[in-house]
Length: 175
Length: 291
Image (cartoon, rainbow over all chains, first blue to last red):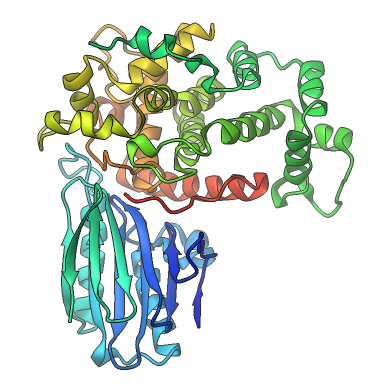
């Protein structure tokens, strides 16, 4: 069983669950791979419970829904401060337990000369860390920053998280 | 050494966009909507007519009463919105499957084009309302050079650029180091060949590096399209192999009053608008392609 708040686009591979921008998906299907593409300044967050084999992924675009309340209400996955709690809640609904969750993050890139003006990527990283700090959640692994595009994959068979950049895959977390 | 002309001459690169888009672009640029011509375009194209019906019945325009009549839909939307529907639908047909040479997934090049159009119009309405319609066209066409480059080099393009890539180079600097020109220059040459105004050509050419006000080539339209391009990047609409290897011109931030707060609101607005347009057109969903 899997569900999300936006429409998933499974493509040709039924075991592949694609998470769009401002989207989240959770599943307990051990044959599934959850994937999100084109993480630039956006951040991808994965959670995985190795016991219940429940996992999910969020691809949020902006740090906070404050000032954008209507959009945050319509699509909480657009923002870190509304999307991250929702991702965890959806996983708990499928049987995940907070203490067992393995949490990873990727993305949060910045344009080359931002010089502290917009800091969309770094503010996305900050809201992620603040939320985790407040809720006693440790990041098992993260690959954030720089100015590159990343694809993030969560393998539901074993919770392995990989990052793909220009066709090259690297392991971010494995049991 | 390959030149911009080689890219345009090889095959039929100028047909990268349907002539309908060019005709409607020219109407918008001239500030003159030809109602008869718009109606003729719509009636000769079933897909477009269906898109107009869907848009006329959308939440934004439909109100309580649904309509299945094309003429009533045309009246309901008005010429400006009809031209936008035509541009968005026809560009979806042209750009929907492109972008793989730049590491963009299926549909992403079109979503980026529409995001650029919507974003540029939004920014212009705030900063220079008289440029709003031109900004829409310039934002839509800004990356059209990518289509010609992809048709010429195919998926080898990124391998061609790889030896010239470095941490301190933007993507367009990398293109120029490899080829002597970049995708924006190719796009500008296409806009010239289509007979569109110089102002549009300049905005397409300079949308990654708009000159500051004290330098030749500066104009507000290029600044607006540059800002819209950054908004699209932050909205995740145009992130390919190039990642975020771009700069945001400091003078654009100041001239357009693009604060962090303003940028975040526009990022959310542009992403939402693109999604709504995609749904209303039944445009090709972005499908998986390796990044």
